[in-house]
Length: 482
Ligand code: PMP
Image (cartoon, rainbow, N blue to C red; front, side):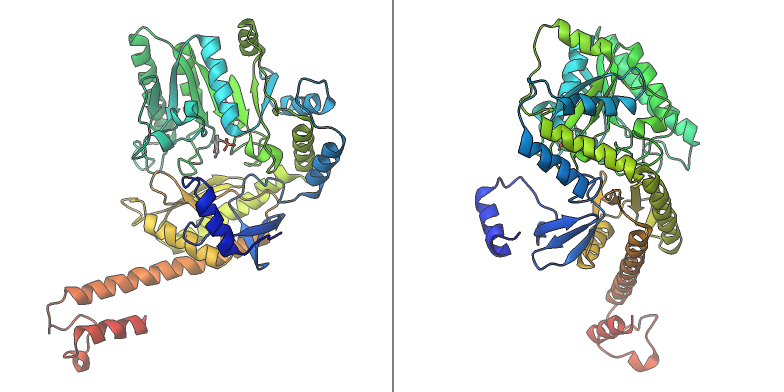
């Protein structure tokens, strides 16, 4: 419910909230007062189709999740030092979706806490400190994670690269160091994995071992990148040979988003040593988890240091996570992600045939990216176009975002209740918006050609009758005629 006018909320926010906490659409932020399923509503009651929110996984305000949380809150919520059922029920549900070696859970409150604990477990188990992460990856906001998140430490004003951190190239076959127009996908995967092997060799040469390799299974902040099939398989081998363990960050891409599997690492022939999960797990409520092997959990136990996390795994959080799991199953949401996701991917590919600013369309399930380019041959990123699309889609009441190193990839990661009709609405609107971009480019090119003409010389488009008109008039006429 709205408790004050939007202008007052903005004024109070500017005064009271840390200025680094940025909002979507910062120049004119949306004030969202309620949300339901795949729609969000502003203070005037206007609906926005949500293509961004991978947190509201089973739909905003999902009744089963709300019921589970409120019922548990009315009965008991306490820290996890008391024996209760919800945490073990939740752990069992998680373990049942994972390979057998991943059998021990630690409950925490956020993706960042999960990755921080994963790093701690890796350090304790291996006795090493050197971490390998990917270019443009993000793993969380804690200091330990900013240190390994190239997306953050590499910014102007960022903390820079620490000695124990090694950054491997993003295994992007479209616009990375090794491209699919120069190599087969297998070669691309192999070449990128060799870069990780070289990093492992350098660490070994210094008489050290690797602590961990951490990566998202599909790279969201990296620009919706899907690593080639053989990449992780090779990388895991090199990392393990260098004494390290392998962490799959499933904070964004887990819980069936890609449809075919519960976890995106299952798209590959690999078994991580640690899996971290968060965001969708609580459908907006803060709950997250680290799952690991018995061996790694035992190394932690042998230190004799107790792990205590006041809120991690409390009865309310776990009841909510259990309801999320049950809803995914009951409503066949993985199947839906697959079917609706395929329709989204196909429709985006059709759009790509019409609009040459779409360089690449990639995705799986409800994880899809549209890579916007200045021209399809050079594949030069088109950030301006992405900014325009995000802004215009918002004006059309459809929320999308842009990411990737050059912020030119339009991301789709909607709630899993998204429908084929929603896809059709998005595609129709996007088609219209991209036509405007083309129109604008056409207009810019015409105006530029007119401006580049020496005064008094007619332009190519100028008819004899227009020859002597001043240039300004020609520009205005051109604008009107397009
Ligand atoms: N890992 C990944 C891949 C993420 O995208 C995020 C959040 N965007 C995190 C970790 C951190 O999660 P949280 O914000 O819940 O701490």
